[in-house]
Structures are given as C-alpha cells and as structure tokens.
Length: 126
Image 1 (spheres, rainbow, N blue to C red):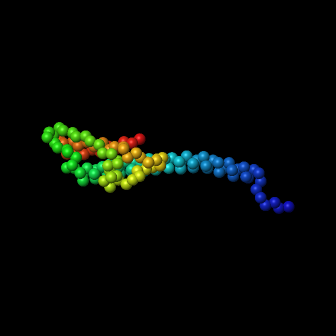
Image 2: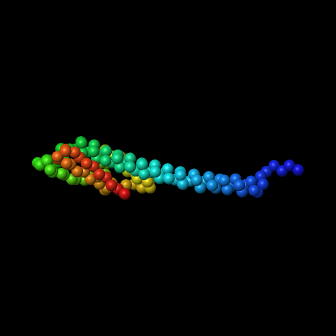
Image 3: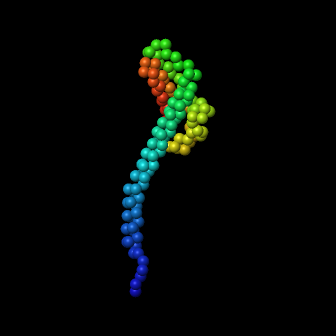
C-alpha cells in the first residue's frame, strides 16, 4: 500500500522551520519599516525648512530685518499655516510615522546673524 502524504513528524518539522524563519525575518522587516518612517520624517522636516527658506527669500525685505550692529541677531517664527497660504508647502502635512496630520500652528524658528549674514532655520516637532 502506497500512501501519498506527509507524516505527522514531517508536518511538525515544516511548521517549526517556518516558525524559526518567521522569528528571524519579522523583526528585521519591522526594523527596516521603522527606519524608513524615520527617514521620511527627516525628509519632511527638511522640506518644511526648505519651504521656510523659500518664504524668507521671497519676503526678505518685508520681514523687517535691519542690521545696525554686526553683533545683532534677529529671531522670528513662521507658522506652517503661513507657508501653506503662500504656496511654499502643500496641505495637508502628514507625519509619515503615524499618518496623522501635523498641526499648521507649528512653527519654524528662524534666526538671522548679522555678522555672517546667515539665516538659520529650525523645525522641531516630535
């Protein structure tokens, strides 16, 4: 008599091997996905800073930055809403880590150093 099928031992071995492979692969894949989400978020922050940079370039003379002394440092903020309204940023702004919409009242901090004539942009939303 020729039975074509798997024995119980063969099935248990296959299930055990698949379980071991799953234990190895799943953490690696989830780690890669989390890393990609964090990289996407870093790219979003760079895009927001870039949008603020374009806004400042377009409105430099309307911002009221006047250097009377080389040691002057001016600080001001721009909201994401301002960047959206001026077309520098598209709405909605979505956080890629958890797919939630970022509040447009969040701000970009900008400082201007008169001595080196350099703008510095900082966006922190965490």
